[in-house]
Length: 85
Ligand SMILES: [Zn+2]
Image 1 (cartoon, rainbow, N blue to C red):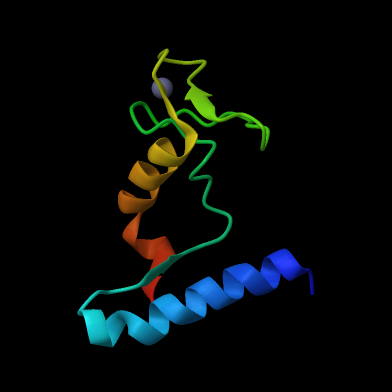
Image 2: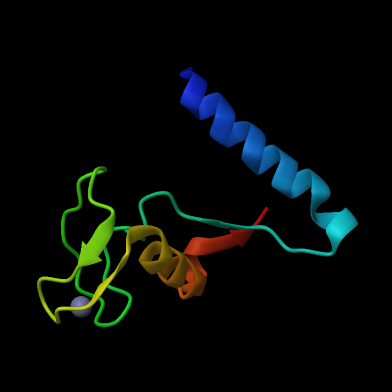
């Protein structure tokens, strides 16, 4: 297992472990969901390199910080691909 995988695993483990203490709810979205590659405005999906820090939609022209765009997509993910941790 790569060290990076260990890091993500540990972050996830901590989030799940502490949710009861903080009264939060951790939800897991299917890993194949294209949260970074999908336009949060029009739904268009396009390829993104890891080095691309701004999502620049080739369909509608929407521009947004990569992580902000992905977070909106995760918040609006279809319920059938989201489960509680
Ligand atoms: Zn778009």
